[in-house]
Image 1: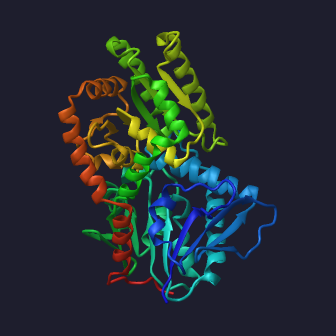
Image 2: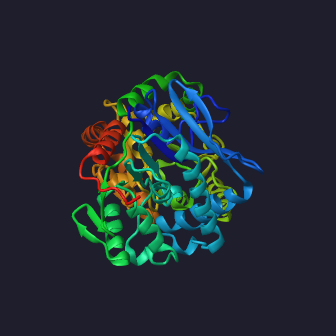
Image 3: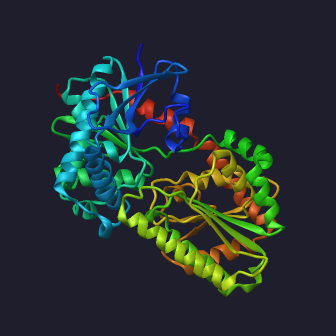
Length: 461
């Protein structure tokens, strides 16, 4: 019987210590039926990793993991994936640090993954690989003799040829993506940029969504990821009894809540957002004492210098805003670098009069969809959304802003705070219909149906 094998950098083994249900795990939840396999890094660093993957079975799903050495992790994850690829794919060339040794380490870890998974595979398996950590994986797995369908989904943005060419190994990366049978992107813009790169850098022939290179065809298409909107809406409604949500609600004492939830990452536009909030209080003093801004931004990748500097900048900005505008019984900006449980976040979204989602560049950004799903129909909040988030292509009824312009964000916050209830309801109804239509289940079904559809011309053995 054919199995689905999911491959990602990290594997969310249920009930493991410290494990959380991240966005990918939530999106793929319906696919994790008995017999399926999820393969990737265990999260452990060891001096001598075992060649064979460690297998754990939970509710009929096999979780197969491998360890890495500290040196391999540094070059693969810190060095190339997050020191070079992440900034490049988020249009931040000035932060891209390319080192040939890191790229070699990136290839070596992908080779290790392919060598470890190949003995576990069955001939009729379908393999679905996720995200920028594993771009060469499909080619390497194919070279080991696997002939089944292999698909890849890029959760982050893609860039046009003029920007990708700054990466010294750009041609190799594009060729590796062309080795998959199907590559999915969050938006048609990202898919088109990839096809343009394949044509310009490799001389590939592009016909609509199809790319022909070296005698084989692959497809590059847009498949926007979604959420389980119905379940999240129910969770938000139930979360009123959550202790933290109750405490936050009580502390508001009738004030409106502006909420932002992001990883602490330079792509999220957090400094500009903090500046915008300060501008709002400066330009519209009528909102002082009537609003609170709560920013939740759990720390991440603290081994990367840019992330440590970002936290220093946010600490400074938060201190400056609170020092200038706070009063004895009112602190305008609350800023937490600790993660919150999913149920708590759902309840906090529901409290929000404004959801601020202003990344400088993002593949999709599911926080925007979660905020919409969490709102009540009777008194909905307003979504302020970056034009450079993939979600902006769908959620056009949000207040769309340029995230590089704090004044524009401040103006959108003011508009949201003064928006009549009738307009809020109208915008929310349109947004809700879209979020409930483009779900995680639809995202998975579209990708797997496309991967199974003929003609899929396999690479030569």
